[in-house]
Amino acid sequence: MISQGPQVPGHDGTERRVRQRRTRRRYRFVDRREGFDRRKRYPVLGTMRDHPWILVAVIALLNVLSLADGYFTAAELGLGIASEGNPVLRAAADHSPWLAVGIKVGAMALVSVIFWHLRRRRLVLGLSLVALAGFAALVAFHVGKLTGLGLL
Image: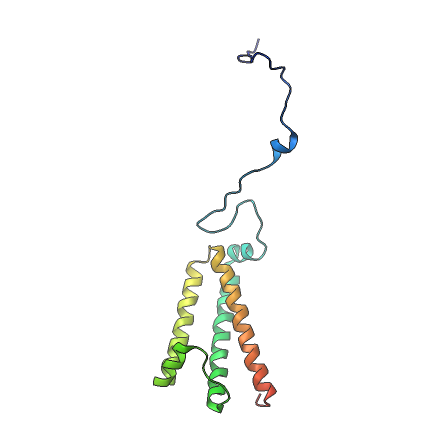
């Protein structure tokens, strides 16, 4: 005979908990180091995390768009139809245009390295996509401006 353990006086053995309370999860632990919840799907950022070549493409596009922005800004500055909006690059361009180019390329190289080294973090992956959208909008603005003036 198998022993059932000590019997509680007054307990008839029926389940008194409701079904919803037994099956409902109460706590969701987010991995604080990377920002991804193990039980949740992340279609865009999870795919970027699992396939590093997508992040390499995003970083390459960021660098190309940054160079295009620098080229269009230099062209607009040379034509006298714009002024530099970045105060750091404006001060560097006052000393030497090559110094401004070096700072812009160096900053993008540093950002690219940071994005690559922190590629497992959800915040960094999202920030890389926001930066890509920002540079794409900036280059589209430059193209629209130069096209509207008939210079492109």
